[in-house]
Image (cartoon, rainbow, N blue to C red; front, side, top):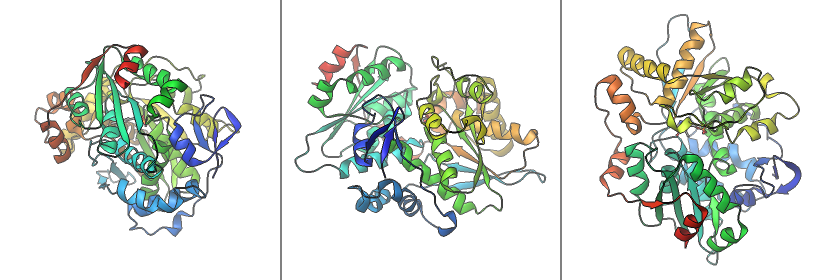
Length: 431
Ligand SMILES: *Cc1c(COP(=O)(O)O)cnc(C)c1O
């Protein structure tokens, strides 16, 4: 399979080059030149995620150096629990389920794709490869997932940039707790400053060459592709008589785009609903306005505080011959008040504790049902609530138990160096 840039169809490359580069040389994002079709009926209902991913991703890796390793990469990277639990429904409603994507080492869905990317890049190294530096700007969850995925992996070091005081206490502790080949820097600035620094460094050929810089942010095609597999698995496992509608908490549009691709590859999914927080760029676009990227607003669902979703460029590319607004994608904004009341309602009515991001999706489902929506539905749950205890505990009035992996990480000492929001400061710490 060939990959091209969203900005230039003539710029063609293989999947391994696309994985290693992160961003295309013209500043565009890498996309598969064509979307393979898949016969969903050919997969067994009881198939495991690694098996499902190996089959679904095979066409993308066909003819590449990784084709023969894909099976092992998926087995090592994607062997995480993936419960799909029924949600309570009224008699008139069609069934609904919640897919818990937060049982990996850092308790958010980003573990799946970060681990896949780390194993893939690791498999591409040889004895003689120079060391690589994975540079990652994070507003919280990405940095931890990438750090956990590359921690202890020979030939790689990880440099994390996060905005001081803008991530939760537990998120900050987590970022500094890995040690070894993982270095955390608390930048005196905003997430946008961190992202700008990472982009500047990755766009500077001298710095890239000197440090073997590579990106693990959601612009990487290696973060997008593996996410297709859990939507494929859910659609196959649930064997719903009617296609599923899927509701995905959305920020940079990586997770939801993977769901859209799973549908377009042939899995029985009907509509994809993007549940955003108070950042309304996507809801306004899907309601008919021109696309207008802007600065992100701070909300309770902080991992989705994105005003200019990077994967929108990929979505526009996939639907360049039609209109993304006409292909069964809907978006709705859920504000902080609605997030809080959803967290309270879920706890009081069902004893279920959900993170603020997952709450956006559950709130959207309940609005859809109230409007007469009768399709079987799947909600993606993106993080464990214990990561956002400062938001949730005051609402539900009790402590949230930590999952074991997170507890272990939070017991370790944590260290992050301060850093000024300037390229010179980044260049110095890379040395
Ligand atoms: C990153 C993140 C999101 C947003 O995912 P995108 O792929 O950026 O749309 C949602 N929820 C949680 C918990 C996250 O960490």
